[in-house]
Length: 366
Image (cartoon, rainbow, N blue to C red):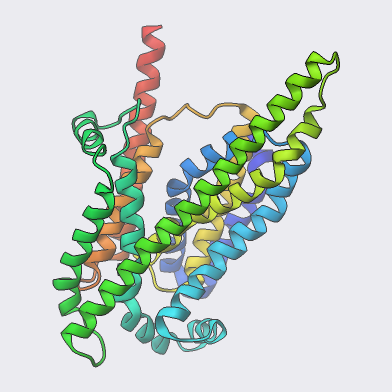
């Protein structure tokens, strides 16, 4: 069952790691592996949420999500989106960005280095909002109670996460932004670049969140209509067709899942820039990770177990928070790629081990 579900992910892993070695040696293999783990860990909660929605869909729409949907997720968000970010930041056409990355690494690296303050500010703010909205929400299950309980109380203040994010952005723009190294331009220009890019990251987060909320509301509305139709059919002495009923909301489910997947993939793509600026390694690592996320979604649906490791979602969001701060610091200071990648891995590993210990204690108590 496990091997069958993950077989394509294993194949893509082997091909991706081999391509990394051929492209830039054994160091590249390590970066691709770290990026894969980063994408899987940051998107684990995405797989859990996807599985919860996917199990409500009929077999046809499940297949659509796992075929057409994976093309959009892997090739759209994980492969094309990093190129688009570099192209916009460096003011290049997407084709020129890819061409430079493959043929003139030195020039490409120079352009990305010049554009790094805006990429880091945009990504840092987007990831910071994901983290803040998570820790300020009151949850029944808490991993680090001493920290999460008071933060949940603070979360009752309206727009607190936005206020804190803007304060962090202002501090970053006036400190890191004023000293960021760019070719030409004044300190004021650099601070303005960081400020504008950070605001753009904040707006992007709010737009994506708004779209997800819109589709979620439409989905709930459609499900209510289906339930009413099924109840009417039962009162009339006939059973409604589950496939037919599922089909009425399936399109909105599919759109909602794709918007949701896109929003979750932002953190992986933006976080990847904290580890490497090479779009080829980024595409390989994130592509491998995305395949595992999709396979994990299928596995969770078929096994019916979504809550075995309850703290993993917490660990993933703490990793997002750490990456957001690292990105903002890299506006001025260089941080080793391996250290950046390991921060996320350590946090995810700690949350996984805490989940295992919790499960053991619950089994012992019962």
